[in-house]
Image 1: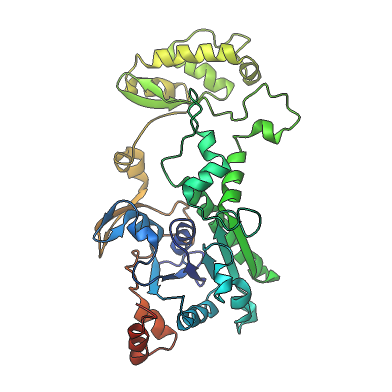
Image 2: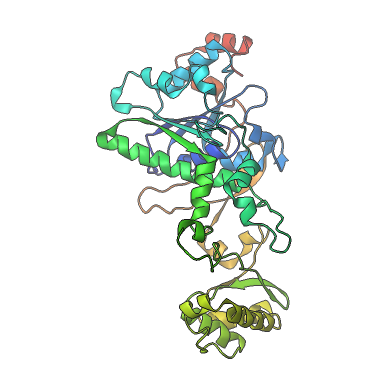
Length: 401
């Protein structure tokens, strides 16, 4: 297999659920070697969440591809010694315990960075938590819905008629944080490569989600001297477009887009001064709303195929609404090979999206199946110098599994 861009980087993962594991899975795709430490008996809680088959969930499978699993009881001193030994060989440690938990067990950043013989490979230690290491919420437990609440996602999705907050039907806060973490880890690796040493990265889910939302949902909160006449969230009124036999969307942002959608659907008045330009449409919201009602009404008279053909002929950004079951059969998705089919030794047939970035010289690919709990315990302990009798003794003492 061709080496990925992170070939030669070793990551020790002490995280569960989706935030740390998904971030590290992306880095494993890119060639990093990952050892995942799990709790004996139950392992990563994600193993038991959601749709599962033969004892492995889709969530765990997706977030832990390409990793090796060792089961260690880190509540014991001997177990912590094993983690310290693994950390000495790692470039990066990723954990998502509540702030202070690993410090109290002697596995915090200061503990592990001091315990290294090779100063040239200073440790990058990544702590992911709900609210960060300081502040009145620092000790709070935080699952995805808690962060969706505090960071504004639930309010952003509120029902416009009732004002009732709505949660995204996905662990959006977890995944946003994971993507932020993956970028931060590679940035820290680059800084170390340039001679700036290792460091401790603190990433809170609250920070990651607020940063994500603030791009386009807080206009009046960003521009504090604005008069408030325009909505903070400029996409708040987007809604799907009903066709005679299905659903889609068209997004007339530019002047050409707006003129095009009107032409495609036979709506007159696109050249009226109140709507002809982006500035005019922004400053005449009621007239724009009236035009959009006409547009949506005309679209409802057409089949999906007819509507999309007309919109594409006018080069209007548009699309049909596709669900997860239908997506792999979309002709574009099939043509570009977006999904990778494989056979997993535990769950059987698996279909996952490929790594999202296509590297021209150092391909990122799925580098192996997600592990069963403790699948690689013996193998990893052997690499640390433990022989068969030693491993058996550790297992008999319930230090490893």
